Length: 359
Image 1 (cartoon, rainbow, N blue to C red):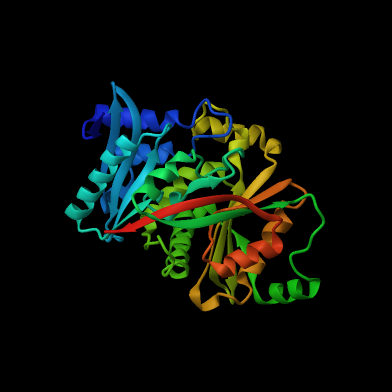
Image 2: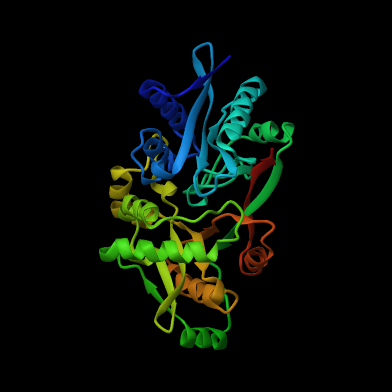
């Protein structure tokens, strides 16, 4: 069993092929992140200018049995990331090689801790699936195998639990009273994104994110060019209604990113790309579920109703169009968001865990 540092184009192509192979020909998984990995491996992403990476593979008898990307973001230099980690079968010997390389890289880069499951930035994924393996992977979330957790637990990593919430959109419900709804609509205005002015809208999204999540675990500040790249690549799958901004006195104070679960129209061999965009146009009526992926409100406006205003508008848009709703991940330690989720949802949909270890 050998560890391969993927420095050559050939090895990086092999790592990308291995990663993609985990998400094709599988009834519950779909490939929605290999495009991001490809950009990073071949230095085609804006983010390459602000991260250091070491792509790794473990081979046994010529076969790739494990892979990941060790990464350090310049704006979060204290953390060495084990990102895009994939291990289709239990292999403690292989993980030992990955772990030793991660510790060595952390020391070389001056990092004080190692994280696992963070894919460069929280906007691109966090958490290994820990409950709900029999359920289909939703767009933008992880799907894996239980043995992945054994690696990190054996090496003394601390688990950071997360949950997602679900709701039956066919049921009769109100998330707030008509009186409260009227009051919120007097205070806030919710508008759809203007994709004809995408660069400015992405910059607004960046500014609110950096204000709202500055104290959030795993988060580090973004720059406008990174979020512009994110939306530029993704906008053909989105409609203006999928990025909502909530305004108070004419100023945007929060946002919500939501969209249909595109995995529902993707085939087992499909990677997100032009074919997915075309299928969205043709088979939009087959999308029965949607996701609220991310929400953020400026610190000065938190706990004042802006979140409710966004949910009110989103549910007005989606009621009668979709049958199910699933949230993005919420840290179990985030009691405000967790309590809100338990209050208005039908319960927990899936559970995930991220891992951290101080060095």
